[in-house]
Amino acid sequence: MIELAEIEAARERIAGSALRTPLVRLHLDDAPAEIYLKLETLQPIGSFKVRGATNAIMKAPTAARAEGLVTASAGNMAQGVAWVARDLGLPATIAVPEHAPEAKLEAIERLGGRVLKLPYDDWWQVIVTSTVEGVSGLFVHPVQDEGVMAGNGTIGLEILEDLPDPDAVLIPYGGGGLTVGIASAIRALHPETKIYAVEPSTGAALGAALEAGEPTAVDYTASFVDGSGSRKVLAPMWPLVSELVDGALSVSLEETAAAVRLLAGRARVVAEGAGALALAAALSGRAGSGKIVCIVSGGNINLGTLAEILAGATP
Image (cartoon, one colour):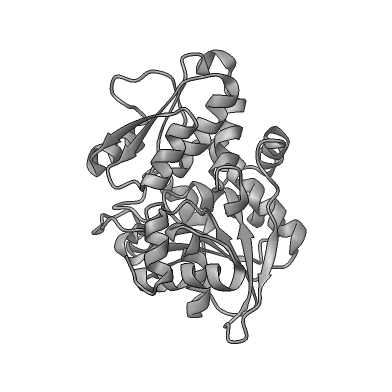
């Protein structure tokens, strides 16, 4: 669990770089719950990742980042690191999996970052080892860096300021850094709130780990939900996540695509696959009733993919 003092310090550190995003009610007559959307799509890079990236980098000693910044990301953390690197006048190298969407890769390059494409297994090893072979600089881990998690936790502070008594908060789960950050803040300030991680059924590693009582490998299939799902829960994250969440919910690609369509059609919000996971779970009724907050984590989706979804297809 990340200490509340660290999360509050992160809020001061990232002020001016990350927005305080709105929490808005989604009005649906047939919804199984009173649904609220935390719109991280409005961040300057279109994703919550700017919070954790800014906090971790600005917290590090100046000397540690002198040679530049390095991270591994499917796209959103990459943009967060590249955004900060540009502001600091530093080079940024980003290891990405081969299936990373072009919209995210173009944004990285637009911000001045260098993209290094790797096969998924090699990219996952970078996540595990925090090392990109042949590249030097400050490695900003997209998940298990405590500074990143504290920055993510500022979302939890904002939620409770706007809605002091949520019954549940639903958080898209990729590596667990967003879940641990938000859950740490909410557990400290309103422990009655249920915390559910949400994964795509194409890579529901946390659900499998919770069922087995330890991280276990699952089948993983790359999909348009590129910012969530994995083959296995990261070992350093397991003790943190397992003590903070009340459960993990898995949703299908069809449910996720329907949530992307609903967000666009009813809320005029463009969400990427991972950004629609929480709403998909809330709409299914599996998170219960009452006041449910859905983290809409990002909106960086290929326009072609979005067009397919809006036309009724599941990519």
